[in-house]
Image (cartoon, rainbow, N blue to C red; front, side, top):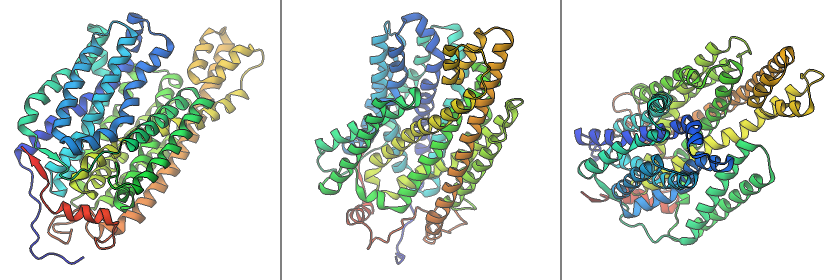
Length: 555
């Protein structure tokens, strides 16, 4: 497309926008910290309120379950009512729900409180991401902003075990949920001052049937994935998963027919959007699946305590933060697609290191692999998020942000469900052929169930028999980790090739990064689209033309 001689470079963000980013980043850090410390608090709250096994499952899962199911609805709502307004409503709700969670006196009250946390949390993430999209119009500044915001998620996950462990040592179990309250109060105080308001000036009416189809589809799919990951292949989760995917097909078909779709189908025909979305999903797929086995390997095979496991995982957390923050710096010399492929190539090396882990002396290789994996995947998450959101019109930033976060949740869930099932099948097949003769049938069944059950049973068996069973289980689980690592290596390598082939050519015509003025238009980069305006999907072309006009803003 011809270059407009009167092109004006995008306005650069100033101190107000960067200060506002800090306000948005703090809740991001605490949301992940809040979810991390729950796992540490489970033994303490179990002793205090005595939940049943089913209640404990809902206490742990309902938060992320509702977030995944409501993200897109919340993002679309933010585009209509105003992103700052929805963010502040969500912050107030999250703070109040945190107080209810901290002082819950029964399992039922805790489940309801955690559900309210999930509903409020679903409004925070897409609102924050869409505000970042609108506050940082300059492509390079926006890349830095998204990298900082995503790095805060990683920091929250890294410090969660340490902060939570310290609080649980000195206070009651509910204290860990009070950490987010001051941050939400701060957001409510300074948010109206620092954060601008944005909304879609022409949102159209909401289609109730689309809302129902989307929520039902996502909740069924996510619940099916969670149960499959936790309990293995059973009829109910398989039926729910298939039903959820079927409803997703019906939802997509309806979006193509109605005048005001809840999700614009044309977005998924944008190559930058679709490839970035797929790359992020696959990156999170391999990360969650591999780390699901790594955490068990460190505790059940190496024999570390939960705290020691958390400390041993710090190289991965540090690598992720460094990778996310280095990604925008690399854009000075490389374009987005090439930064992503370079990072994923490093992740391939990390998975290759993981294939060499043995039953004995595996701690150091695992720590090295974690550092490489997280460092390599982080640029894809940071830049992929930026490229996705930048490829869509500004007035649709809330919905697109929600799609990105939903992709994260589904990628994480599918990684644990699919790779977890593969690894568990390998473990059971390997351990069944190596158990010693004379082992009681009920004990053999439990040993073949999971590595955790095997360690417990081995501790109950007498002397040499327990040692033989434990060695066999640990060797089988190490084999399972090997096969999972091989699959992750292949999937990541294919993702590298796909991103390089599909996004590399686009970045030559206007992707992020490169030298000064490499964007060819004075923008110092930018976000490419695979289609010229004249040949793009008609509704997307309309959106792009509208994007050139000022968006509805209320300060």
